[in-house]
Image (cartoon, rainbow, N blue to C red; front, side, top):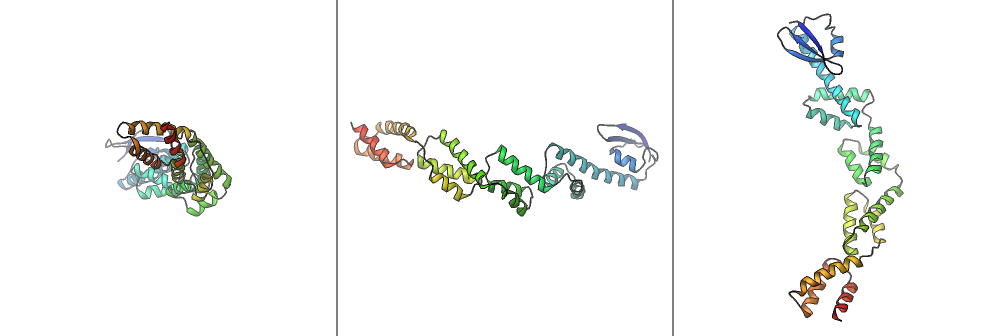
Length: 256
């Protein structure tokens, strides 16, 4: 068989057309290596070798393009190539070459990932660690770099979450603390750090209480009165975490 035509495509890719009208896209590295501009005759075996080598290059160049957009871990690159239908062998070639060329560097990746998490999210150390481990990063490497973050940074981030949530709180202090504790645990902060700050954190829930109490009292007063109204009212407010003194004061005021 013989190459009848070359056509330049985008980037460093050419399309060759054989005398049997089959067409193949090849990288210029392959064309130069096998001197296809000079030696245009191909055996079946040579064509097969060329195609296999071109597939390896394709995996590498597509990975390189993927990495150029954003730094990636080896796991991310392999998953990307799998979705692109490259074989494990082709992915191995691409990853090895990327690593040798310095494009896959776990130390730099971890540093960049932690820096982004600190600047662009409210994630705590445990969540950052879990996310990195899911991306195939060694746990010891993750811990090494997370330990470089000053503990005050994590405490300050807990404080920011508390202040932010307190501004929009519409529940009792008890319910607020229960929910914010759960939220902070989900964000990946350590329980002791959360508890120490949340225990000392206080909010003014009087406005939320009055609004909730008025709503519940008005609704119950339609069906109940006297002792039964008071008991049902107290039960509703207790389940929402409000203090007994607040509830009793409200009932006393309603009695006048």
